[in-house]
Image (cartoon, rainbow, N blue to C red; front, side, top):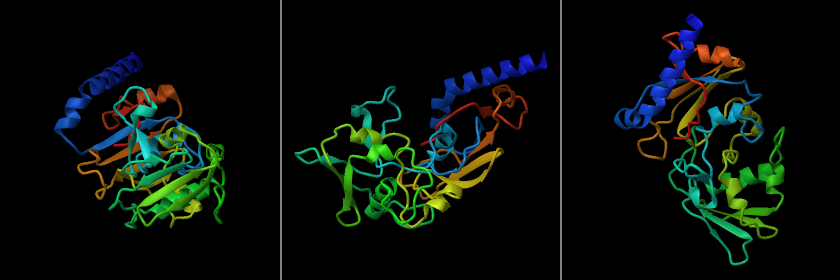
Length: 258
C-alpha cells in the first residue's frame, strides 16, 4: 500500500509541476532542482561520450555556435538560432560557413571566449591537435570539413570540401558544444569548463552530478535556478520511489539549457 501511495504521489507531483511550471518560473527564480538520473557516465566530456547519461547534466555547462530553438516542438532548419555565434552566412559556392561571434562571453574560469576556441574545437574533432580525444564518436560528422580559419577574435569560418547545406543542422544538436582552447581534453573528462548557464561542481561516479548557477552568464537573468543536483539511481522503480521522502523531490528526466 505504501508503495502504491508513493507512486501516486510521484505521478501527482510531477503532473502538478509540469502543469504549473510556466507560471511558477515566471514569478520566482532560485532554488536547487533535484533530479533522479538514470545512469553514471564514463566521464564528463560531451565530445567523448555518446549517451544521454552525460548529455543531460552537461548540456547546461556548454553552449553551441548555434542551437535549435527550445520552445519549438520539432527541430528543423527553420528552428536553428544563433547561440555563441550572432549569425551565420554561406558563400556563393556553399562551401564556406562564416560565424560572427558573440563578444564579452567568458569561460567558467574567467578567460574570454574567442574564435580560437572554435578553431580548437573543430581541430580536436578532426584529430588535428597534439592532445587527442580518447574516444571520438562523431568524427564522421566533420569528414567534409577541410579546415577552420579565424578572422580576428570574433569571427570563424568553416571551409567544406564540397557543399553541404545540412551541416549547420549538425552544429545545432546537443552534441556540438564548443570547448576551451586552454583546457586539455583529459581535464575536460573530470572537470569540464564551459560558457553555459551552469558551472560544473562535482561528479561522484554512481552517486551524483552537481552543477551550480553561473553568475557571469552572458544571457541576462539566466539561469533561473541556483543549481541542479542529479542523484544517480539506475533502477526505474527506485528512481520513481525517490519522490516519497520529503527531502528528495525529484523529476525523472530533464534537460537544462536555460
